[in-house]
Length: 357
Ligand code: ATP
Image 1 (cartoon, rainbow, N blue to C red):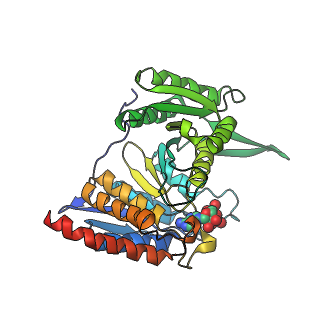
Image 2 (image 1 turned 135 degrees about the vertical axis):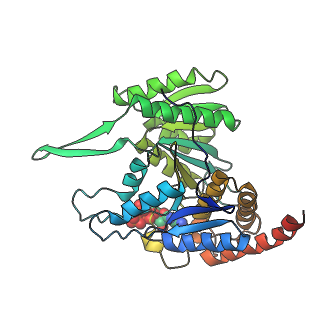
Image 3 (image 1 turned 180 degrees about the vertical axis):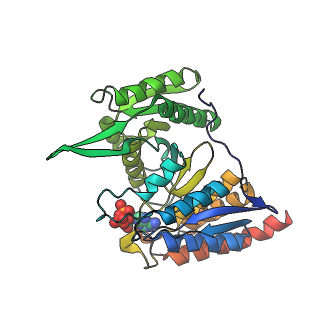
């Protein structure tokens, strides 16, 4: 029988009140962003020990990846950057996709909530994207049937469509949201997207207090850029999810701000929402550290370290929206380390109140 729960929040691997968490820095800006997370955690006294695993994209075989998967299975929780796949390797499978599939992280959640002070096309955006994370267009079942003809399979299953729709409605119910919009292209992909849409309508019947509507993906993109305020919680398949995530992040500040949460029934991985490698800006002290730091905050919430999550989250908000310290990607002139130092400065002031009250 299908489970109705959305995600199992079981803090794992806890020794003497400390959690062990797998850290996969990945390539590009990943390692520098992870250093900021560790610096801030150390400064704030967060009781977490990281098991750092570097996956070398140039190695053949999957030993590093297998080790990472074993570590996440042991710890239950990971934080990650984007792992590069050597593109010359023909038929190379993305290690990011392999990780999500192996751990059955069937849903990805991205909450786009604008920070005041960042100039964007639309102010005050507050939208949640719930995305199927393990199948659909990412099934990676492609073959050349005859020379010059390539086929790619898009897989939609009733079970996974149900799990992701259930997650979207539960999320809406538990977070005071009013509406779920299912995004699809069922007018063309009548069977695959048709099933995804049909399942969402079936699940919606269990939530009579929530409004449910649906929209075709192309119209959705137009509606998003012209009037994003009509959206609340959005439910969609894998490829539409990555496109809509990038549109929404672009509308509300870009790749450097928001976290993406990957959940299954047993494990969770936290990473920047748009999953960029940022190769071109690596090592220049200009990458926005906020998306990875927000991923770390979400990880703390998942593990039940709510006090630490809250103070770090408040320090992030104050740094961006009140102290106006912002990296170039969001219109500022500050370096990555300027932003992190300010966050620590805010934290040290908060710590006085925190420890005494
Ligand atoms: P690649 O693997 O070649 O790096 P990608 O698809 O991962 O490509 P990126 O080019 O890394 O995408 O990122 C897309 C854009 O977002 C780039 O302009 C990049 O500089 C920017 N970007 C991504 N992350 C950040 C960040 N943390 N701070 C500032 N800019 C960022």
